[in-house]
Length: 221
Length: 244
Image (tube, rainbow over all chains, first blue to last red; front, top):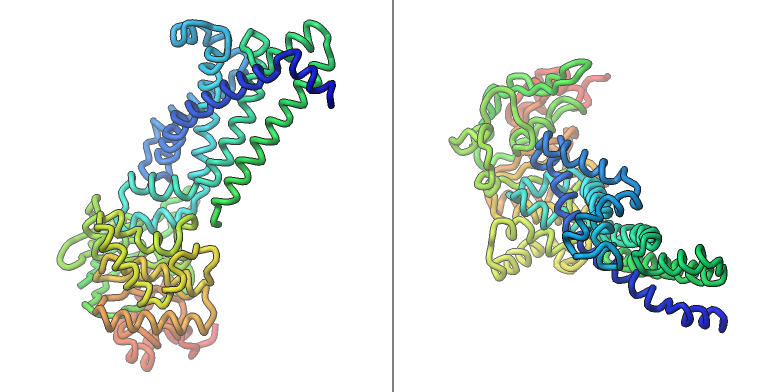
């Protein structure tokens, strides 16, 4: 245990952990800010949705599928010019947050869309019969009824982003991935690699427990 | 008055078109408790959903107080006159009883104090004052249906559409719900249209009835007349006077 903390201090893993949390936190917020409305639009423009718009639905679906099919490490490299344009650099946690956000937006969009599609059609029909507008249904039915699954979606997104951020370590992205690559891969320091792994596993477990707990607490079904 | 004039509806499919409603004519007078009875797949739910605007019709008119509502796209004003109660309750599962009943008033921009007063009135009416902060998951089927009825009555509609509202309930709870509906009808002078496949329900609450079969009205009239002198085989079957 003492050895664990010694390595933790020696390689400044707290800084790496902080950078990972920063990257993942910022990207989760941005991906939800964009992915939530995107998922709602995809859901309501579906053939059986509130306001069917076949062309828009197919176009958005195609963009989501296309973005999701690009491996993250390729997306990260492909977005370098855009990242430099946006934040002035292509390295470090701030730069990685750009590609992480863009990589996670379509995932969040799909999480939101599938959560909305799980709502009983009868509940939406009842709302329509009470005079609810499309806007009312989005705010007062969709977003209220899907809160537990959206919260579970946050943990899924964060865990996926932790994996992505570790990949970004390979190209100077900072965070725990950077430590694992530098010490574990380039210097063959297996003990540092193992400590990094343990920290990553603990981080994932904490996120899973916290968000699952919140979702369970607020789920009234 | 609610008039169904020459209403037809066909569901298109690749295999075979389904003629759910074929030239339906019905006159539902004010303060009627009008039963629409038929076997499964007869078209009764399609008819009710068409009145509620949840299905578009291919032909005909649905006239509510001299206004053809079948072609109106923005139905917000119409829904102020119509309350609908569904078989599956269709309550918001993440909101408590208070917020479920308040929902139609919130979307119709009522003031908070008016919503509060009305919700309490309705809870007294349906006998659920002690469940105001309960969530639907914790309620029995009968209690959920009471919440759904209270919600449908929230903005004082003139017409109440009931889609098989007791079919998921036990006989005792069914009796309680029917008694509640009767007292609501008498107190608020509502016009009620009730879809069912049980003749017992029609005889216990409806003053007029229409028997629907394969999308067509087989017979219609005062409940007592239809019960005592049925003219169609289906009515006799539903009354248990004819074997399958």
